[in-house]
Image 1 (cartoon, helix red, strand yellow):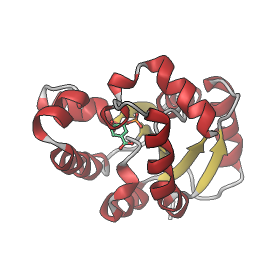
Image 2: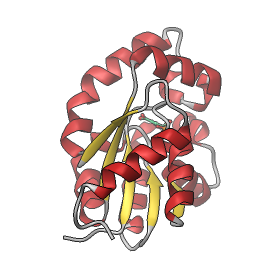
Image 3: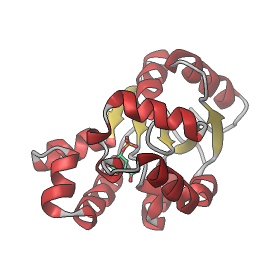
Length: 177
Ligand code: S3P
């Protein structure tokens, strides 16, 4: 089946948004960040949604956004790191997009998240963020790999390099228009 959308999946800090913006620019496609869509929908930041409404509420919004995105064309979508934890989300996303998994070493993920400020990531706003990263990665690793059509290691690479690697990868896969 031909698809004309790309969804970048992967753990927090693997460069989904920064390289997604670059990728969309190169392809001349639209760019959407799922977390921003959720924030617009409810008029609250992601940390506030987690604090005031809880994670389950956030996850339901995430599934709603996955469904709404199914009507897009020529769009690069940066998914939230937890989108793969619901099989329904993966099924919806795979029905209209090619899923590229971005990975990075735990050390690089930690450094990028600390640079961004861990407050932006409610799941890591804890006393031992490295421990949380390791715990979540252990739970999610197989979910990311099972969901992905392809994967790119982003360790030590800037967004432009990552975007160009994704473009090279797309050339080897038929059915992307
Ligand atoms: C989450 C990742 C975040 C955001 C929320 C939950 C997760 O997105 O959706 O904080 O469960 O991994 P990013 O991966 O863009 O940081």
